[in-house]
Image: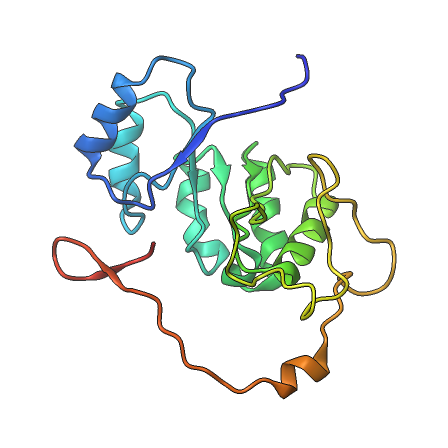
Length: 206
């Protein structure tokens, strides 16, 4: 198999119903998508099993999961094709390695969720280097990024992309340095992002 330079995936942030997700995938030309992330809500694995019978697009599921137990039915029942774990959400590196082991036993690769800044990125890079079933890493750096997550004044030493990859640090620690003086000099400012709601009034993520 030759080198893959680009793949296409879509993240629906579980906005669709089973019927909507099935209709979308069936209208998409075969082979277009490398993966479809979180098309429907994840509380009920049976809903994903139903969707699985209707479409052949690989699923990437798990960015909101907080333990290996939430991943277990999706791995054991072959519902997901990529484990979308987040090192910060799932309980750190120890729990992440347990999820990685469970996924490996079911021939499922990791596609880590990683939108939370340089510390999360560094931890996830170390995780990726320690497992054999790593596929792709989400990275939130672009010319349009303005959230301050990767502020070089706050994080004077941080991992950076070199081409399409991030070199694994060889020194002690995660490989990130925090400007503690700058952090302590800042005044706390409360910020609340907009809350999105489902049709039933419950909150959902972005």
